[in-house]
Amino acid sequence: MTTATAPALPDVLLPGRLFIDGEWQDAESTETFEVINPALAEPCTEVAEADSADVDRAVRAARAAFESGPWPDMTPRNRGRLLWALAKRLEERKKEVALVETLNNGKPLFESGIDVNMTIETFEYYAGWTTKIEGATIPVSVPGQFAYTRHEPVGVVGAIVPWNFPLNLASWKVAPALAAGCTVVLKPASETPLTALLLADVAREVGVPDGVLNVVPGGGSTAGEALVKHPGVDKIAFTGSTAVGVRIAKTAADTVKRVSLELGGKSPNIVFADADLPAAVKGAIGGIFYGKGEVCAAGSRLFVESSAHDQVVDGVAAGTAKLTVGDPLEKSTRIGAIVSEKQMETVLGYIERGKEEGATVVAGGGRADIEPGYFVEPTVFDGVTNDMTIAQEEIFGPVLATITFDDVDEAIEQANASPYGLAAAVWTSDVKKAHYVAHRLKAGTVWINTYNLYDAANPFGGYKQSGYGRDLGKYALEQYTETKSVWVNLR
Ligand code: NAP
Ligand code: MG
Image 1: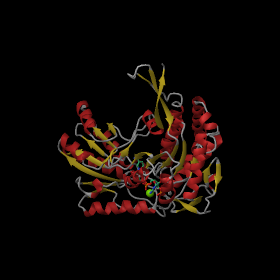
Image 2: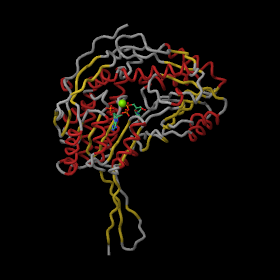
Image 3: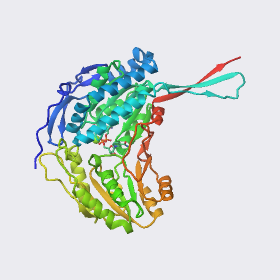
Image 4: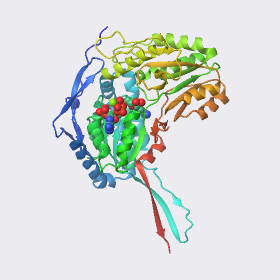
């Protein structure tokens, strides 16, 4: 089977350039890098490659826009209207943006549509917050004094995001940052810079002032590191791997930057025998295979109560075998192309490791027979123990590890026996058990009898080595504001 040829990209991406101070600019070095369409394993365009000199230019533009010009003078109401306009324009360009996301990331078109919808929702949600970021009056006990707090924007935000939800995860940083009155320098992942550039284009179209949103595609160890080191950046908002998050936190410490980290996961999906098992089977399949498993919250460890083992594992294996892998532009496709050749090799390596360590493949098990792109069969392992590599390390691909358990506390203990703590799910029809388990799981999100639900109003983030800080909801605004205490002597 072969995939078709790709449709053309919008002109603004041919080639893609840096967006700094309201203008499309080349890199000072004039270097560019190729962007690959993973479904065809061929370049779809090239993009200017920022290095530290360009990052410096972007940070200066963001600093100038933060300190003076129209942005700090804009009323909260007008800032809200601008974010709303951005959401509306994105909605008008939704088809184009979703297509670009699919051509760059390899995910099926319907998933890119969901990503763009979530991005629109995120901008709409934070548009409503601009007029609601309130301080407090504080009942201090010092006689004759009046004290109050102001929640001021933290300043210039460096946002660094990964390749799995390139536009959507950018919006999780950019929307609350702009709502709070910050300015932003956004560095997308090297694999997927295109929709971040379209976001800049939309911001330009609706009149976001120059310098308020800058986008600098470039390497992590060059452009990314320059952003983290830059003394003109007040805060780094990062989503990506735990290894890079650790490095960023260390580097940012030199300038005492504020840091929030959304990192990896190895999320447990726990199915009790008293659950609605067909629903749990569906949830287990969607929980791991949505987004090709390149989802930080993917339910990559499936814990099944032993008395339900056969029904659940047979159901998951049969359902997985029916998932259509292939051209992400085809309507029937459920599993698109893995984002890059390197990531495909990583995933295939883990599949081999699972076989070597003695787990049993009950669905998939290797590269899909589709040329020329990077396609992997959705793979289900049974007979996994929690100490195996495929149960401990984040694979970030379509690979599920099934582990059997016998009682509630054993399930909780094993689920928590991971360095990660991003998300988890529990399937049961016993309401007491559901909450008991939900409260004891060390995870930033717990789904009960569902999986992979998100909402702009609901906070998302990790426990343990899945990071700190929360994206989304009112909680995210804390990441982008400083609290100032003001004392007034009334005597
Ligand atoms: P990654 O390698 O950590 O990269 C993430 C971003 O950091 C990219 O923009 C990358 O740039 C940049 N970067 C790399 N090294 C850097 C450095 N030294 N200084 C500053 N920036 C640097 O992650 P990825 O490979 O893109 O994505 C996969 C990982 O992200 C998985 O582990 C997954 O769990 C995690 N993730 C977590 C969440 C969440 O919400 N918790 C969401 C999605 C993904 P380059 O692309 O140029 O290397
Ligand atoms: Mg990377």
